Amino acid sequence: MSETMKDLIGVDTVESFEDLLKIRDFCFSLIPWTAKPYDMNFREDLVSLSKRFRSKELGGWCGLNATFFQRVLWAAYGFEKSECVPFDYGVKSFTHITLIVKFKNKEYVIDPYFCRHYTYKNGIPIELKDLIYLIFNKDFEAIHETYGVGVKNVYEEYSNDFFECTPQKFFGVVKDSWLKLYGYESFMQEIFKATDPKLLMLIRKVDRS
Amino acid sequence: MKKHPLPYIEELKDLFSVGSFSDILRLNDFVYSLVPSVFPPYDRSGQEESFPELCDKLKKKEIGGWCSLNTVVLNRILEAYGIKSEFLNYGLPDQSLTHMVLLVHYSGQKVLIDPFLNKHYRNAKGELLNYTQLIMKLINREFNDIVSIYGTSRKPAKYIPDPLDRNDPNIFQHWVNYYPRVFEGKVMNKFRAAGLDEFLQVFRSGDPLFLMLFPLR
Image (cartoon, rainbow over all chains, first blue to last red; front, side, top):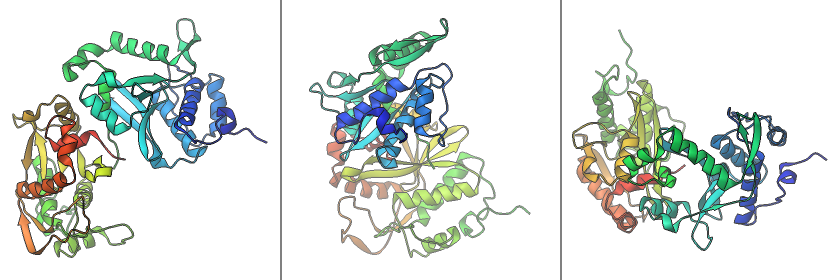
């Protein structure tokens, strides 16, 4: 019998929010970061694609992680297309893509690229609409970035090899590049009068006709 | 002789091409006056009529609709003139506080045009705001630098949409023609009844544009 995505992930059905997070953790660890992101071919089978990620033949950035996570939810777990949609936001060089997942009639932001989601202090996930309210009011203390478990392989061009990153460390690497290369802090201060990256979520990209 | 893109629309007979933003606003002004506000709103799903047939029904006030129908009609007209536009649907569906507008591609930017309320947005200096600039001004609470610019045509109405009660018997006996500001005021009253003010308190400000921070898919 051929291997399925469920076999690879180890989650049979999505019964709880934690099951969703396990799938997200799997995607984070599976997809390496490479300098040249792969533009996913929608005709390619998910299992064979997973094997190419695992062998580090292919890799990508936030767009690939979000698209792959979305396709896994559709194809392997029966989510409707309207129940897991890309959440594409930001401006200038500071853009990001996560996924808005509808689970038990509530929408949540799940970020497979950084292997995290947003919770209150007590660990309860924050619904999207409440998250937007809190961010707009700059109530960042109320929002916890809760990271999952996993290890991402990150390509390092000087050594021509991969090094392993936890979700927190990986986010640190990416944010560091924003700080050093693109003038992140002065830009954020100029437009938001604050530097928390979650503020970028308020500038959502729209592209549908 | 140059072929008119919409020969069946008498009101646009002298507009063979659209080059300037004022041309686009003229089309928006036309759509506002074309689409009546009626109950129930026309549901195009399953309909096989052509666009000229749809326009004809609207002209005769046989059908009408709310923000989505206005937006679709403007999108189709702009398309005929070779102007690209995207639908932007936003708000909180659980509270029936939703709206639909058009992001029109103009001069390398996306500019928000509201065909239902017949307006667009500029800054206090009168300069056109693109979509990102508009959102940034909201985020920075620069409300005084967001100015609604209304068109001049009037909308025929037999009903003002009520987001709370779809069976509201508040249907006018006769057609009333509303200028955009007055029509918007009526629509906002209905939104207030649906909890707009409670929603806005969370943002510590009273501007309904905050609903734009919640785009819908």
